[in-house]
Image 1 (tube, rainbow, N blue to C red):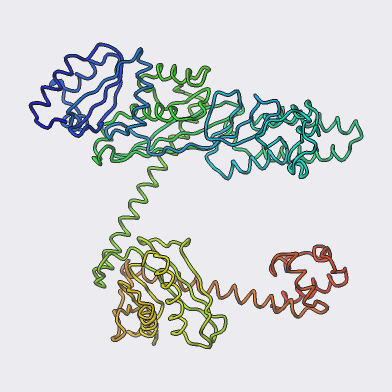
Image 2 (cartoon, rainbow, N blue to C red):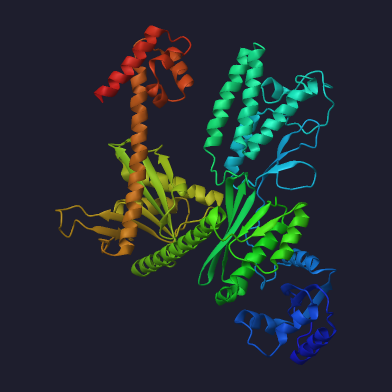
Length: 632
């Protein structure tokens, strides 16, 4: 690629001269041949030349791009619509830095009902095909997807197998039939009509057509009753009640059963958030957010120069270029460039009419406002998080300066010991990252090697266990290890680290020197050395309060664990004292209820239902447990 400025100018002028007055796509490239920008045009020559006109000052974003252009490639298309499709495809492929890009490229799952097959199946997929099947979704929440699949298997037992078969061709059905999760058409266990009826009811359920589904189910229940099949009729009755309750709780946005996507945005300075809501059959299925900030090579002012409508256009083009289910109607916050052409493109992709609508009033306008409010909330949350991060950084810098840490104390691990005269001794480890507690990383330990009231020995054990594992598994070392205690605990921690040959950047102890309340000795101190009186903490400073909060959390976590163990021990002792309950029956009770806690919560009838526990013995167990509870 050429580097001489004059040669580049001459090369570009030659390209501009020979560009056709035809629709197509253009690719701006730099001296290394990297694609800077992909655009489309109704007339390539006019559009590309507009970047180099001296009249009219370009935005800083465009000006920055133009200074880097060394070559322009173009592709002629038969129509402007083809140019739009090709532009979106090339943007997705090359991710040019000066185009608006969707950073979140998730493909959410769908439920697929294969009605094109003789005996339709229910499967999950992330690909939308023109195969005659019905697709329901997208399911943004995988938990909601699994719950829906579970309900379908329970109430509408269609086949799960993917193998082809002829009706009644197999001598026996599979295990799914045995557990009532399939009607067994492969072995002729149901009629074609019965299976088709079940498919229709599953479809109504997925479409959210509650009234139609209830009518179908009641008709089935009445047929069973008329045939004196009362057990089957009762089963359908229970299904009606359960399905009615489930569908009543769905997040219904509209009673019109529309399939819509709602797209709206909000911006604050260099931040812009776009929300995409999925409404299927009048039910809000979920949403997807796209966050734009410091667009294209990190220049934060560029987003402010972008037309918000252009961003929305890019979102529509790039999102629906993916393998997604296109709804009948897409609600937009405001008109977007090339709206009619995009509507035509989406209609072609879907195979039926798709409408892009900018609602001005009524229910649809309320949906736009709801999506926009969510975009505002997302930006507000982002700004709040930025403020929190800035405050946390200041605290960490203050701690670093005060205690002369070599690096910012971004990760702090704090340990505490809890026991009563050495009994049931436990330890806790809590983690603070960038000034925020991280409960998912907390750990608790039962002391194994120390007997009696040896807190220093316990600290040595837990530090050894923790950092032996860190060393073995190559886990990240904290910037600061903090122990709840003074010089003795600090010495135990440092000695433990030396025994396992682990080098820690900083090990400190935090302790309150006990004395008369309000005296100089009743103050918080930080110990960094085994010798000396430590550094007095100024508790009015936020950095000191952070260390105290971490220590208090370690103390709380250790005490909570210690109390749990004591409670379990008390329950275990309690069940061992119940008259008439030996080891065998004790084991049966625990196996049946799963835990001592659940046994204590069980009713008299629940206890009497346990094999080998007769009514009189159940009363003894129940009375003993609850009399003991009252005496606690």
